[in-house]
Amino acid sequence: MCGWSQHFDNPAASSRLRSHEAAGRVVPPVIDVVVAIVVTVVVLSTPVVYVVMRVHWLTRQGGSFECSVLLNADDPSHAWVLGVARYAGEDLEWFRYYAASVRPWFQLNRQRCDVVEVRGPDEDEAATLFPGHRIVEVQYTTTTDESERWQLAVSPETLTGLLAWLEASPPGQSPRGIHSPVEHDG
Image 1 (cartoon, rainbow, N blue to C red):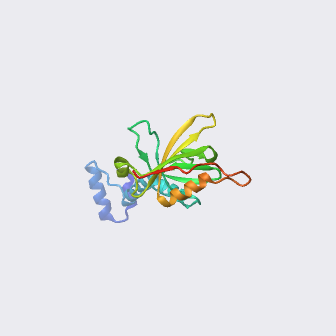
Image 2: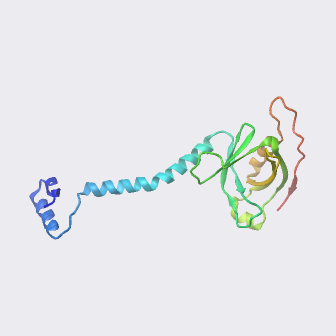
Image 3: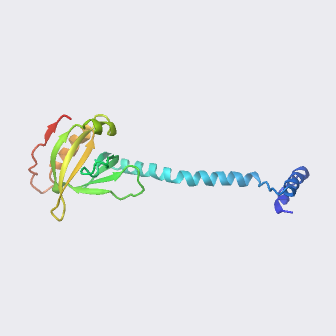
């Protein structure tokens, strides 16, 4: 006989358990089922809670804003990716919205950025971006003097702040000579 019956003080419950044991089935106590359900819920919800807490942490820090990025404009299979960008000193840090890492996906130093164009999204882009977002194309010169093009989609209010931040110079340096980008309605 199994040791389950020692958990029951009630003789009727004990006899029911013995009848299940005689049939080859053991009915676990209710507490084991509840613990299993709680453990399952905790295990399944932990990643979701982590991502929500990470997004909350990113957006609660000063200078952060929603910013979608076209990760590879040359490859049509790549789409716009939702993220959060934040100003961190002289860098613009970008984080994927739904990711585990607390490190930025990429950083752009404002001294090596030049705004090429500001435009509205085309029909295909408008379907994947937030309504009203504008696209700013930035040419970035890497530390190895290679040129990269990045496209960022932001709200009109954020665009004003982003352009002002890119054109500004840090204290003690002369203002940047960035010309106003060409504005296109897309």
